[in-house]
Image (cartoon, rainbow, N blue to C red; front, side, top):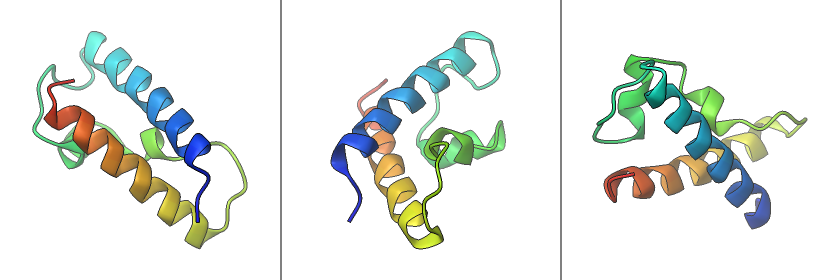
Length: 77
């Protein structure tokens, strides 16, 4: 199981990165869900921390971060 504090920290970091990319015009100001970001950037970069997780742990971690970001996006950022 993934560390919830690490997931929360990555979610916060990803939110900042997404907002920065919105401000710079890299991604649009409105989008329906996280997967839509892949049309503009490699959105995996929002999900992945810079550490040495196993492939399985990284997948679980990224899924948890993406689920939290989808909720944030659905709430209207």
